[in-house]
Length: 391
Image (cartoon, rainbow, N blue to C red; front, side, top):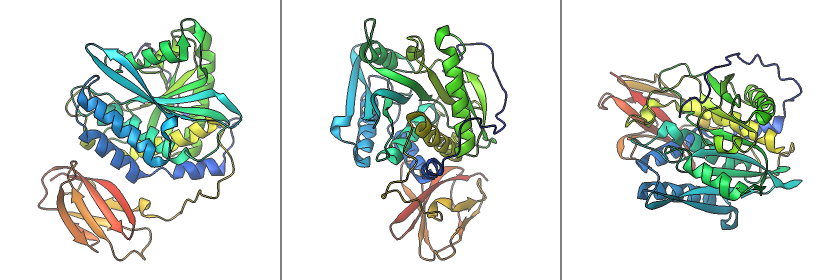
């Protein structure tokens, strides 16, 4: 990705929310984002390797994403593959449609690309992919007034090929606008940089290109900033629109916004765009902001359904410290009643390297420097955390 405009608006949001009001049910759903789910998605995304457009690995990643939606309860009728040519090969965009209750033919699009080049692309764009999946999981049975399309594009790294194909062949056919789009909300490179103080996210605003949609983009970008303040701990700043998958929409006059990491990583497009170099807690917090904002944009029900339960004190709040660690880590529980549990450390491919039972302090002195997954299980509950060893 690269900037398509040369100036930058850096004002930090001051939590002046204006007309937007805090909605408790939106907050409950935003808090349902699972850090364990984020880490699991990042791990599985990484394990598909270099997912270059038109390759078997790219196709494998698409099928993995599709199976995630099926596991959440989305039906085959809600899932569409949108193939497009790439050289001598074919790649596919994946579109999942959740129908709105009041405006079924007007769409909020949340999107990001899943193709990578050179490396596994855990930041660019496993981070956005994992968040879109979490949002789809949480909102699957939540009524929204507007329809939502969860879209995973391929061909982004080769020049927005997949999103351009989708806009020119599905959203538009010739000069005829087929899909009525409320706005396009894109997530790209939101993985953060391991070891940095990742407390701020850029909200992308259309400040160039077609001029007629700039004011509307500024308005929805401010709403995105407001939602981020309401439903996550992150601060925000405004970033000019990037050269990413909302641009083909923008060029047709559609309204765009999106998230992009504030401290820009140098690892994307290299073999080092790995789990070790990202900040899963940052991705988790952007996930909370995303779920809050998506509910606002699609006008989700303000009443929790009978199947929506959000325990306030779960294993998700466990802490493992210090992190990075040298020889010893401590597991800290919010609920001291947890007594019988196992704790396992695996590499990123899932190979078990260490396993203990009911130990609050775990000796990791035999592990080499690097990033690992710490998995804690008790009963039928499981949580995962990133563990860094640095001696």
